Amino acid sequence: MRIRIVDAFTDRPFSGNPAGVLLLDAFPADAWLRKVAAEVNLSETAFAHPLPAGGEADWALRWFTPTTEVDMCGHATLATAHVLHTTGTATGTVRFAARCGVLGATAEADGTITMDFPTSPLTPVPGPDGLEKALGAEVVAVHDTAAHIGDLVVELRDEAAVRSLAPDLAALKAMSSRGTIVTAAAERPDSGYDFVSRGFFPAVGIDEDPVTGSAHTALAPYWSARFGRDELTGLQGGARTGLVRTRLRGDRTLLGGRAVTVIEGVLHA
Image (cartoon, rainbow, N blue to C red):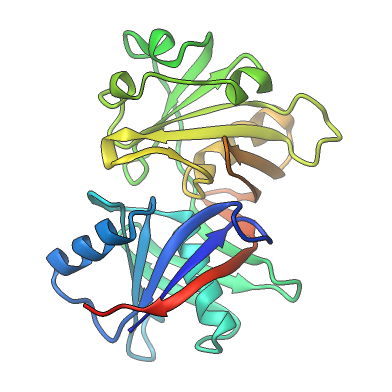
């Protein structure tokens, strides 16, 4: 079967967030899916298979980190939609049935793919004991996210603090069910993005995820409320970065980005 590595939330190779993508006829045993994801060893590998016509979704979609299955993943959904459209397997809007519900992905004329995800509610919470020490930075505010994400969203003082962060990952591991998203407003309004973020997920086997689409279902309402605008652009990443365009639509958040296939091969397993 064909296996592809796709860089998501970027229009050039070796940037954004890489994901493995396998299109299947049906889902094999979970143990096999986990072994493939561990072998690919990226933050997520997406597995998808077509569903019968006439249902609420066109494809079934699952995502695995090297160690566990996750409820929601933006960049691997973008990568899967990119593969479907660039191979001619699908056109227009593709509907994916996933653990977090039905997700839409629409290919635009310029190559951008816009995904329709559930907005994550945010709840202000006290920072866990030791959070500032684990991050090595002053914390401005902490919010918890919905169950399908399970992240802490942590606002830091400024963009420089986010960019220079070198956290204690072992200490962060126990502070949320999935990960910690640190964020701050962009330093300059003319930078081409409105806010920055970085994501650390040691609890699911990922030290740092370059561009976390699902986290933007929480970052979009957070920063839209701050800026008073429903359409924003976020820049995420440390060594690798990518841009996520967000449009807040009440209980749904639209996530837009580009993708590029960098590796295509045959899986002999």
